[in-house]
Image (cartoon, rainbow, N blue to C red; front, side):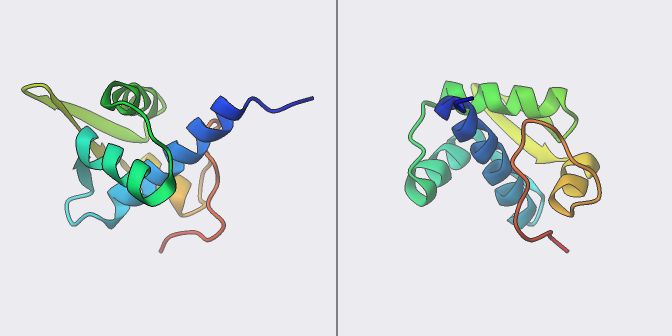
Length: 102
């Protein structure tokens, strides 16, 4: 069975979002900052609305909390998101990192 490339990109992008949030001192970032990280660092070039859709999906899965400030969305990593990165619990639909965070 062929894997849908769009789904592969989404799963990878979701992991990148969680990793980038984990790196931030306050575990938060805007959709614009994440969009630039995906584009410049990982060659995943998508619109801000696509990133915000992924934020919403990650929030539904309990991996992030999303806050709106004016027209910007801010994602904040949750304990469940950290557990996925640490390999303590896994969220289907998010790629698993090769190395757990500590």
